[in-house]
Length: 159
Image (cartoon, rainbow, N blue to C red; front, side, top):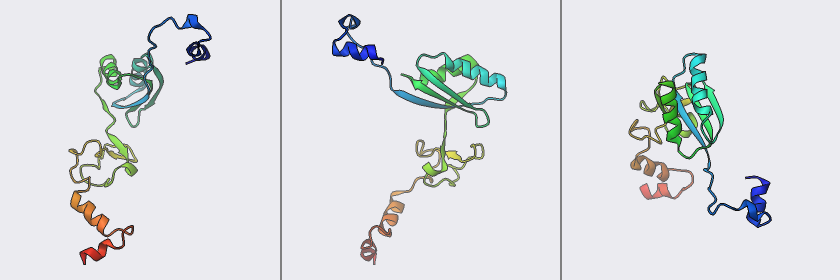
C-alpha cells in the first residue's frame, strides 16, 4: 500500500477509488520445503520455479540441508509446493524437522533422525503418530506437576 492508496481511502483522490471492492492482500507467509538438490543446476531450477510466482519476495536455498524457504504474500502454500514439483520433477514435502529446543524429548527413537540436518530432529509435535513416545502421557504430566517446585504442597497430598 502506497501513499496514493492511503489518500484515496481518506477521500482526497476520489478518482482513484473506482473499484467497488478493494482486494485484500494475503498475509506474509513462510513456506519451508524439503527438496533434494544435488548440484548447482538443481538449485537454479528450484529457484527459477519459485522466483516468478506472484507474491514471492524472497527465496532461500540451503542445499546441504535440502531446505527451500520461500517468503512472501502467498495465498496458498500448497501452490508453491506443487509448482516446484511440476517444474523440477523432484519430490517435494513439507519441512519435517524442528530445532532440538522445540521438541520435548528429542532423543526418543521416533524423533531422532540420522538424516536430519545438525541441530534438528523430526517434528513430532506436528505429527504425533511418527513417534508415540516423544510426547508426555497424561500420567507423566501428572507426576511432573505433583512433584514440581512450583507447587510445594502437592507432595504432601501423595504422602
